Amino acid sequence: MSRAPLLHRARSATRDFLHSEAAGGIVLIGAAALAMIAANVPGWREAYFHALHLETGPVISPRYGPMNVHLWINDAAMALFFLLVGLEIKREFVDGRLASWERRRLPVLAAAAGMAVPAAIYLFVTRGQSELASGWAVPAATDIAFAIGVLAILGKRAPTALKLFLTTVAIVDDLGAVAIIALFYTAGLDLAALAAAGGVMLAMFALNRFGVRRLAVYLPLAAVLWYFVFLSGVHATVAGVAAAMMIPITRSPGAPDDAQSPLHRLEHALHPWSAFLIVPLFGFANAGVSLHGISPAILLAPLPLGIAAGLFLGKQLGILGSVWIAHKTGFAAKPGWSSWPQIYGVSLLAGIGFTMSLFIGGLAFPGNEALADEVKIGVLAGSVLSAVAGYLVLRFAPPRRMLALKLIAERQD
Image (cartoon, rainbow, N blue to C red; front, top):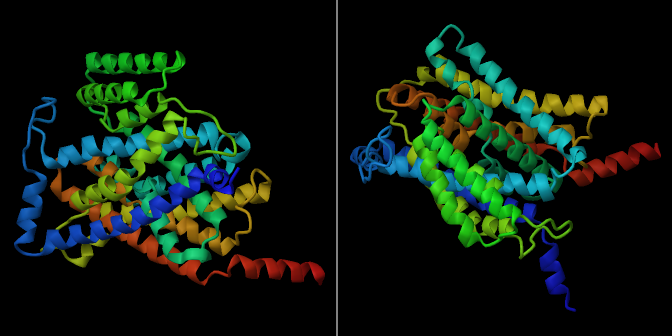
């Protein structure tokens, strides 16, 4: 038997994920920059905002009125992104790096602290302004594509262990973000539609239990599930994660790219569409904010300051602090062959909120254009600051090889 099939079989799904997310993160950076240009160049500005709110129809739910370009992107296209997020979460918890509690300890602790501390900082900065309280979750999320894109630029200066650590933390972070959206950013519920959505999920679960493995059966049901969730008042993107939980998976230790696993096949099929079309399109549609008439003092307003401080300060304090405590108490070991400066650099990169932060910001202040612009300014400021600081720390942190030589020298002494 040739070595090629064996090598192909042994390829890591997580490694493929990192490669696609890295390239997609770079495309996302370009889409965000293009959005800022389009929103601020005279002549382009009007066309940009007009195109986003162009009504296309139909009226799927009276709650939202006629569908427009922005709704299709944020509620329909992003449901596919959340479907991919759900598939990644399920893969990691069932058959990946989070399949055992031993492996879950550090990422779960780091992600939880990395969400709680930014939220606490945001609430402290915006204290006394009750109308801003609903934005507490905006700085709690991490944009894995953007963060991995920065790590890709660093090349070998970012050890694989750190990339995998950031990936697993972000996956748990995504799970927390989905729970937050479902629990805290849900309008008045349509119980009949919600019951219908539950019925669709039960049908998918039954098909899974009876051994049905054809994606052609599950995907139409996932579309029906999205429709009922959209009607119910729960944000429609939650349907993507719910559908992912019902997709069958074949456990394959040591060969996570099992060609017979429906979940793996769907995940690999969605990756390029998500990384190179859906997420950049979302970034382009949501990152544009007109700076006309806005002074730099806006950065010190409570809302953008709370978001930026939560992302930049909260993420690094929460993640670095939790890893340090876990390591010192023996609860979990820090990522292998990584120095504390490198872990600090990755903690900074986790402050790149962007996609998830913009998404939650849109849910937190619906219909308020002024606050929506402040959210974008805070997210962009905090994310850019975290990206630059994280890059610089990792760029000048001692490489792993130097650390190994230093440890050997210390032991010889």
